[in-house]
Image 1 (cartoon, one colour):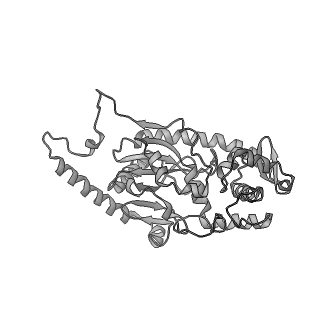
Image 2 (cartoon, rainbow, N blue to C red):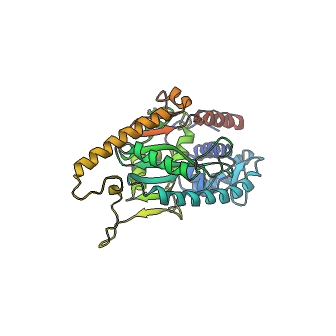
Image 3 (cartoon, helix red, strand yellow):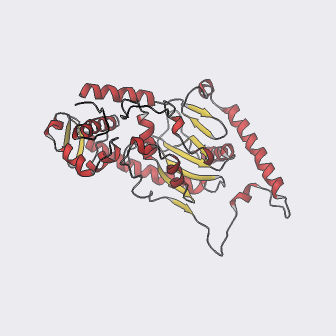
Length: 342
């Protein structure tokens, strides 16, 4: 296949993008439909363009099809894997939705989403449930403190030999830091090359972002979050986002005539006449205490690589605690697989 040398899209460009995309999802045993292929390739085109190329005999040396799924030649068994994992993922998403009903009582949480879904409902049976959480500004440490405390009390935290359906709380961002481009392996630095592969893109991070499934979305924060990360369209120009929100998605709406409980006041002394400014001062102090405590309890392996790269990022706006960050490994395997195919 010829390389992508200019912006004039041809079938050969689409063909190359299709092979690259199916090769990536093959790393996760996930075959794609023609609609998903179009969603995930980095060449802007129409669905009928993708279908035309998929029916091209030249592609059949690399890609096979069965029951509407496309996969690398000789990998037919991953169709069954995909079907099995759909049930596992739905179970985990339902549990995440139940947990979110508890976590949303923490007044500073704006969004909760299930992460590490590479593809549609593609989660392993034995895996934990990775939550991505957006908080109000200057409340990220308090939000994680209460989430971790509640999860610990309820026995929901993953342990060394017990991770199945446990809740992983390793990625929080403040509402003022929703643009995650700088967390990519290359720091989101631009490149003159139009081809994502030639730019050495952080392929896993891009599909991780596209695969986020919100289960709690306060005041449309998910939509604002995706708007802040509009750069993803540079890599996935045909991507339309989730077709619909998760069945368990929780929306926060204020009802006229029924203000209910002001959850922000749940963490401020409710003494009559208690000064609001003093209450906010107390919250700020608690935020600093929560930060100090969590930094003291931070595992040694995280402290060792803290803020040295994008694996473990710790500040007052972002808490990304992925010591076992495999993005570089996936990128190497992906490039190697493509080279082996071509």
